Image 1: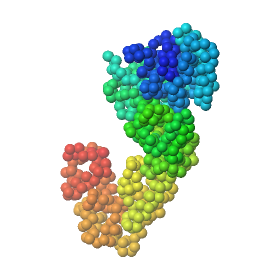
Image 2 (image 1 turned 60 degrees about the horizontal axis):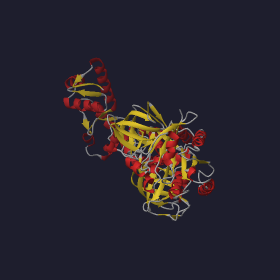
Image 3 (image 1 turned 135 degrees about the vertical axis):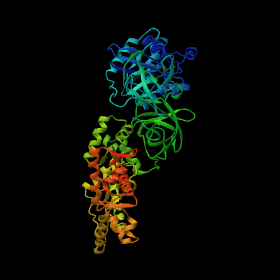
Image 4 (image 1 turned 90 degrees about the vertical axis):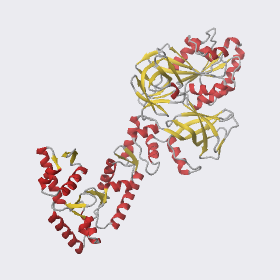
Amino acid sequence: MKNIVIGTAGHIDHGKTTLIKALTGRETDTLAEEKKRGISINLGFTYFDLPSNKRAGIVDVPGHEKFIKNMLAGASGLDMVLFVVSADEGVMPQTVEHLDILSFLNIKNGIIVLTKCDTVDDEFIELVKEDIKEKVKGTFLEDVDIIEVDSVSKRGIEKLINKIDYISNEIEESNENSPARLNIDRVFSVKGFGTVITGTLIEGKISIEDELEIYPKELKTKIRSIQVHGETVNTAYAGQRTAINISNVKVDEIQRGDVLASKNSLEDVMMIDVKISLVNHSDKTLKHWDRLRLYHGTKEILCRAVPLDKEIIETGESGYVQLRLEEKIVVKKGDAFVVRCYSPMETIGGGIVIDTAPKKHKRFDENVIKALKVKEKGELKDILEEYLKRGINFYPTKKEIMAYSGDSEENINNALEKLIKEEKIILINNIYMHINQYRLLEENSIKLLTDYHKKHRLKKGILKEEFRSKIESKFKTKEIDILIDKLNNEKKIKLEANLVSLYEFKVVLNDRQKEIKNKISNILKKNAMDSLLTIEEICKGDHYYQEVIESMIGYDIEKLDDTYIMDKQIYLKVKEDLIEYLKVNNEITLGEYRDLVNSSRKNCMIILENFDRNKITKRNDNKRILF
């Protein structure tokens, strides 16, 4: 069964709740205070089935100015709105404000419902309808039908139901393939079940036993049970009103405005870049550092405005703005929002989120404004390219890219593949970088190695781990290996024996250095396992010997630890002999190894500890086995 979510909007006491009762046969004013005062304070929820077998969930939102925050929460996730105007009063202040809010929240489908039509004559009804048409010009309600009803006599109710059914056929299916996201609008506890949250599932799907997170607190939770319009189901889909029983989270740990979503699908932020439009029937403008109330999803949050492309955004104008938030929020690119003055609380505008993870911008920066225009209107691949250009040392994973863009994984994969084919971005292990950053890494690598070779003329190269830490400490071993391999394929640098060097670099020895190298080799071969030597014992303070030894390490010499060295060929031979021994005998003690190689206990200990460090052997009490 296809599900749609309908909301009511309109001035206080214009008959929204009574209209819903006429449509559904159910009462949505459930709080004692609501019944006593005759107005909706909180959100009410119910449903009814349409003639075409679609189920329509209804959110009854309050119209009183003092409860506008609840109205904003109820407007989150609506497919259609019934815009209610009373025939005996016509358009009122909250009527206009609700219309502004719905327009900014990108509600696309609506019906204007003229209520209490039995209380006035036909001539007065026509006057009210003309006034309504004038007020909705330029909005999403400009060309919609006005249905005359009276909820008491049921006049026009059937016609309204048929119109809702007809429009529901045009409503696009919600995206079930994206990560799940639900803006929480109520939290309460049910005896014997525990914590229950409600809201409209705006993206994805959720099933019993799914493990999700509550943002921005990143609380881990699990789905115990799900209800859709009072019926228990195994899975809820995007577009459905849901009540969800969750585990591991207490009622006082969450609140309206929090978001239930797939794990790792969202990131909390303290700053967003947006495109804001101001209403054209107010004297309010937007200046630098104005304090605002931001309404996103079901959350209200205070923030400061920093207009980026204008000194002041005037009434009826639009502009790019960076909002500096006073607490954390989770948003996706393209999300709609509404802003109200801090005081007095008046709706002044709204817009869409352009960037969910911006850097702090300077005002009137042409590069920033150009990038925002691309992010606002560009193709997904252009938007992702701008995101990946963010700055030095910025290497997001696909999960981070998905959390930023708000698009489906399939679309993101296609966009990233195009960028890779166009050689605009690079994939290294599981992280992405812009080609500009890659070229900067290349430039820094070449400079580092050039300086190193000038300082250490006889060293074959810098240790790979030292190279990694100086080039990009964020990289893991696998990522630095891929980077080196890529630069090696481009014949820029190379890796030999764990030493990184410029691709064309070779150690060149003069005659004296060649003579010293031969002397060192002969000394190490002669001593072999009988007496391991230190670098100091061979060099005896001679700088030339020190330089030559450095050039031989990793090639002709094996460095056993920080002090002792050994001829490389002899080292490889004793390593192979030990491996063969352990394949047959499984284990060996220090004493047994000493007898095997006929050397001192000290020499054997130095060699075995080297094998342990290089993961050739593993110590198990006083014995060693193959790693």
